[in-house]
Image (tube, chains in turn purple, green):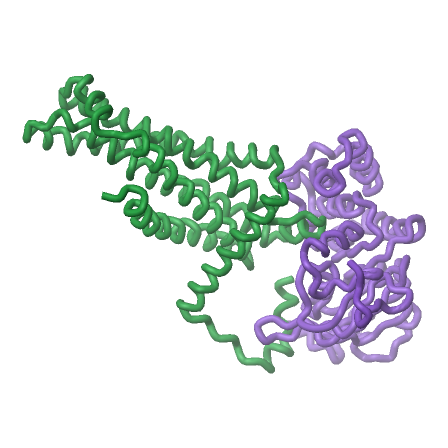
Length: 263
Length: 269
């Protein structure tokens, strides 16, 4: 995983994205995104549905290769990396999927323990202890034997979160972590995201529509619009941003430059 | 994810991509199968078979197929006997009844029927299972957890099929011959020892073993096509259904073509 001279990572890089483009079937989903997340920071990415947020997260997670650009995860430039090498980088990453993506043939315990068993090969007592601890963190202790079909959407999402943090990653990517959760559980998840940063120094990217949550937890906020980075800054900078698209989105107005009727 | 791909602004600018022609589609499909086989063999070479996964797949793909494979083979052996016994009796060739039935079962009926039954039951199951995992992002979740989908999903299914297919075929051989025996002896009044002696005189052990060798090729085809179709599934429930149907159709077509080639290669006249 050494990087060549021309692929030296930017200074102070937790996650760095440079000129990332993604096109599929002649559609330009991402049009040259540049972002930097410093180690231990939380960056929230917001934007209208279909603006490319999830695609960007999948590119950062190495799940889809961008059409152009570079992505650094700490010191490793992952674009063009072989899958086996990418797996070593992924061992330091965790991903929370929009719809949880739990393995439906496995119990909650087996889902959370999956990476610990398959990649870390830890002894069973240690795995049990980690699973118990992570499920307690997300407020689901005692649900080890349930299957995904027996969980509510919110519970499934929290199991997905427990699975993502079970491997103690240094990088966490969250896709809509609080959507579909009641306000109290959403706050618990927000606090957990902040805890991961404050106690363990985890670098995070959170894709979300939840403006309140974004301004609460983020060190930096980015707004994507039609595949482009429209705004980037601290929560206060974004709150005071003059861009009419950003303002309309933050304020949730139906009138403005974003053509709601088209969506 | 799906809605990410349909940015309206981009849609207005770009022409719709052309559908590939059938030859290109076929070549891409063959290429994908070859690539998947190569990756799977490489994973196996790296020691990538978890014992528990393998046993689970041997059970769900193989053991569960046994009852229907036995039933199919038993009735087909019986029907074969029903056709041949009166015909051979008519020409005074009763001593060939057992041999003819057993030869047809061992070389052709049991391997091909096992292939078809395996495809219908296990191939479709592989495609549906992996296809559902693909469209619900479970395959992405595997990759995000640094676990190779080839190692976790494809290797155990391929190896389990290769192990179980010949076993099911051997059992089908027995069921088919037994079906033929029941019909010949109890319905057509062929003396039991004439039926069994005929098998001893006309059949070689290689008729059974080479028939089972055929099924190893079929196993690779069924498992690979099922996995490939599953992993290439995009969209939702409709596409999972299409992947399942494609697996059955493609596998059966390949099995019949391959059977013709293997019949000539393995049993030259």
